[in-house]
Length: 291
Image (cartoon, rainbow, N blue to C red; front, side):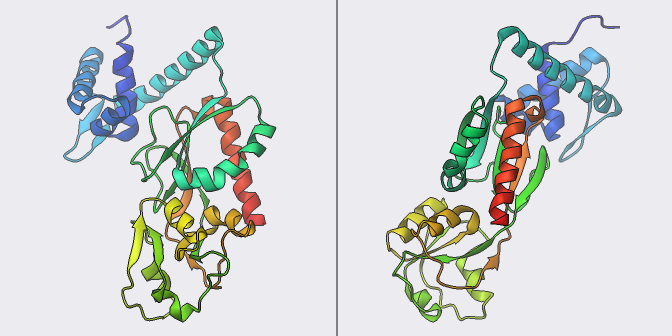
């Protein structure tokens, strides 16, 4: 019977592999190769004298020993984090937030003064993504994700659904029947797109050319400059419309297949600042919906 502990690195690798049920996912999180993850898991299993995973053709599955061991390992890491913070006096309210860049610029940024006023001791480090990430970035405690479906590897909750519609600069408005003759802009790789918006109204669509970009920021900026129409939704355009920088000339709003989700890492509940930030985001979203 072993009387000492296995190497901490093996345990960290086990926790990541169990969270993803994938050696590849664990390797991505830990900045390791898949073979290195596999070798560390084999070493840990050899140390314990029993397997922790069943290797299926396309996925991993925890054994009974793995199911029993995982919460013990996670609680041990939480204890280490709390103890280290207590000894070093490290700031417990530093929070890494991950978000797509349009949400960070158009929604989060303008509201941060309110968060700062309410929680001056919480330090936010905000990291932005152009494309939807496959997983939360290592170290991120909270993520706001714009997606068709939530993650199944971390705690996820629906923040809000929305509706999408065309906008343009004030004074640029044209009749709905003439919109396909205008310069049209959109964010790429979304189901909330021009074709679907037009089709839902029973209008004919003659494959008008559309300029795509990898972020709503580009199409919104073109529309504000009077360059044409772009599609958008309330979450990122409401403030711009209220300030008179954009107008939404048509009444029809189409329901978005995509939605906004709040993702919380396993460590988020151990970080007071992360809890405060997540609660604040929920309240701000509720405030928008009520308004």
